[in-house]
Image 1 (cartoon, rainbow, N blue to C red):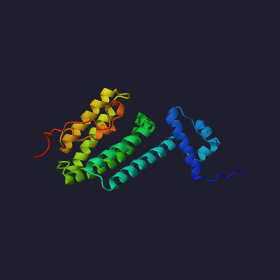
Image 2 (cartoon, rainbow, N blue to C red; image 1 turned 135 degrees about the vertical axis):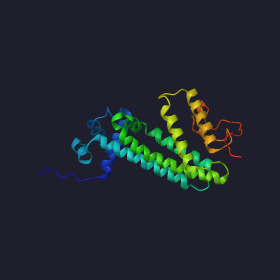
Image 3 (cartoon, one colour; image 1 turned 30 degrees about the vertical axis):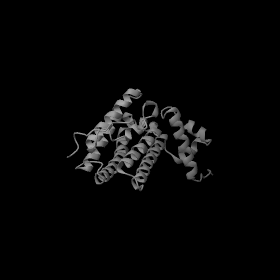
Image 4 (cartoon, rainbow, N blue to C red; image 1 turned 90 degrees about the vertical axis):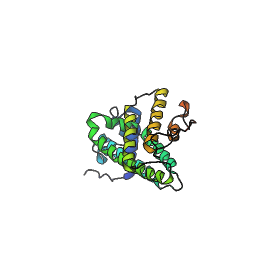
Length: 228
């Protein structure tokens, strides 16, 4: 009589975590199911008891990534005592940090055969960011920091700007290239938000200190797009 395997959420999660580590270390394509079960120290049959394939684990990891983004953004939006600018900066820092830790997933789903699923998940994540930015813009308008007539449309435009510049950035950008990109992001964001030029310093804080991050001093000048 065949032995019955008792399902264990802890064991399944152990397999998922081991697979994630191997995907990050070796890449998805170079990681086999044999590699995963060897790392966990279980029989191959146990892997297939829980999962149909390693692709299923990738889907689970991506869903966890979305849940982490959602929880992190919600926490920032619910935090008391933040100005709109502070909230804006925290949302972007949170999104940047999670994205950097998930480069393997991003690379996998950018491949042509995975585009459909990637686009679906990306739309969900972008929807969260747009909703958050809309709320931040409304707060900023009420505080007198932003001068915007259409918060929702401005949030959509900002999101499209950030996504476009990020996707067009070279795989290994130079320090000068990063500085130019962040300067462009700052200048265009200030115009869209109707702010004084040089007053949106969150992008300086996102830059590594080695290339001039952590709030380089700027001389604010009045943006021509600020409503009188």
